[in-house]
Image 1: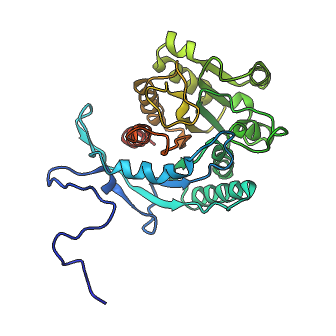
Image 2: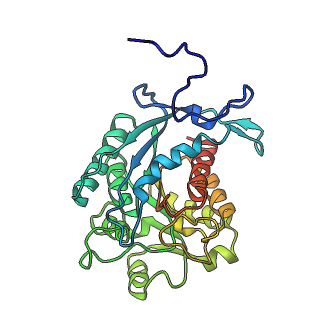
Length: 318
């Protein structure tokens, strides 16, 4: 077999188009999952979007987000330091062609296996629509004592399952009704007007869910909301999982979300929230969902997702 590695100007497909000897790309930190370590981050793709109640190409998001990680350096100028972390890519979970429940089972099984065999590795799950959070957190919780969740979202995602089965509107209803997490262990941040119904807001209150609306985000610093949320959860759970639905953002910052709308969070506020959460030892996992690259403009939304990952890795402690 011919060895092409010594031929000038040939390089591996998917790498950065331009190389500067003094710049290390963030993508260079990511290694195949075959070389497992006891500690680090593991990226897992969950490309499921057939469960979306609106048209969605979120199945393409994991690949596009990975591409954006090749566009940025490892150097954080605000902190004056390079990211130095073990990051592994486990690839994408194979979705069943037609069976949503089977796809969710596969996601739960993978998260359980990864966290069981590598308990010190922190999963970063790339959706997919928000339906993937139900099996992701279910699998994640199998190896933990008590799990809480902080959900960034314009919507409660507490829809009933009778009107459409498991969808991207039902993940947290499913988590509560299956007993994976308790309502009092769920904090929702960024809910906004005309994106929910009274019935589901009442359901959240009846089950003890902590809700911060966009009015709260506007009138209070995001730092205060995050600090309050962590202080509250520390009294109740051992581990916190972050779920980032990108439609929590104003449509100006996330044009690639299927459910875009005005009046959402700024990218600055969301990134600051991620920095603060990453600095907490009890935060042990995260997913990023609801990006449709086919609707995006110049990959703006996927680029922001890449920044969420990079800030999370930079600031993660514990």
